[in-house]
Length: 265
Image 1 (tube, rainbow, N blue to C red):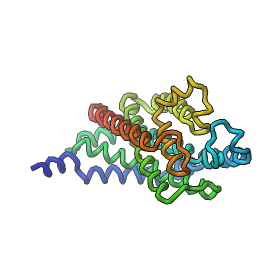
Image 2 (image 1 turned 45 degrees about the vertical axis):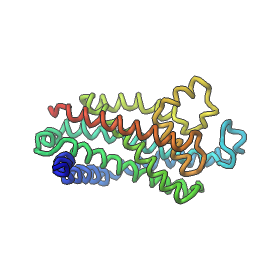
Image 3 (image 1 turned 180 degrees about the vertical axis):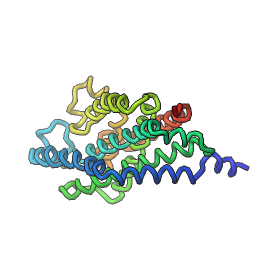
Image 4 (image 1 turned 90 degrees about the horizontal axis):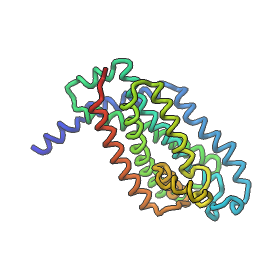
């Protein structure tokens, strides 16, 4: 009886269908894939490589034995996850504007399965882009600390994706059009990006700015990636993991709830 209830609550067919639709949409738009790789590459090439020529001691708070390129690369991976995961929420608005969302919501399938499939599709595309950036960073000379660290970094990628996919979904369900979503997203996402320790260590920031960074979810995603990929975390990895786990469950749950209350018209 319990197995039947779980199957009814989580239907694998709509989950796979929505996941596959998100994947096809991502692979079909070649310009989106190219742009998602080009911007991180430019950060690494024109910011990471030149500053790596400076002695690490001249950059306040820089961990010993870590070049600036090694320090920057996990942050750029986190940036990729932030933008890719959040923008996946915009697909809800696009589907609403083109009438697809109305057809999905009136279909005789569980809405939780629908949103789970959409979220997994957005997370998959974001992680693919992040792994491509990791490969580019390694080709540029970034030293991965260990094989186990690399696989552990994927766990932090998943948690970071889940956090900001849920956040993007909340924004999308509360805003009625694509223009509003994009303007509000940029207004919120850019401070999250710059106040996450992507470019400089937390120790180099003024005390007031550090307090803001401590409540920024991306701070813990970037720090977890930095600790697993290059062994230069500021916080204990267990703290990064716990914070991201709680935030991902909370935001993904809220996103699913607001989606279930969303009007298709």
